[in-house]
Image 1: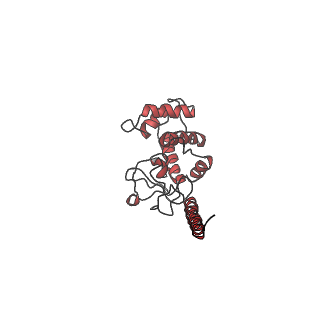
Image 2: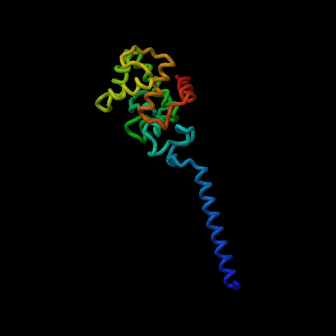
Image 3: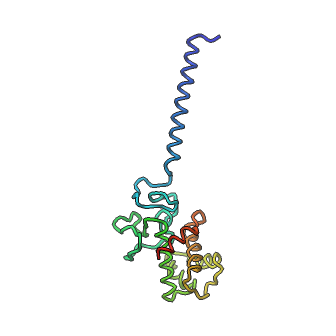
Length: 192
């Protein structure tokens, strides 16, 4: 038989355990409300790959966290939606206010290059991903395999071709976890 003192100890233990469980439940609920991959220092105007506010953190590929799926280097180009150089936290690669703005820049770059005579995968990717920084032949082979386009076939910058190129090149740049969706491509293309 339990004494009154024992009953009080059991009751206090149950209350303490309940309080601890309630605190843990609140913490878990609060973690679910905030997106765990978003940098707290991000500009609230920025929208990331997932459509949420702020840049993604370093657990994501560089092109995804910069909203720059093509990993375009910083230049003097006045890209639509470009984060100004003085506010760019990467220091080497462009950053954009949204994934779609970065995708738009990639589409525009590829279209311009094709129209300027870099009209085969060999020429285009040779310029885009030079061998001084990349395994260019591997890049060409990957994009050729993904698109079904022979490395020396002539390219014309149609919407369908650009979509295939962008998807394959973004996959090469960022990995399979971050595919370019139809919606993302259409939104980016509509901004050209």
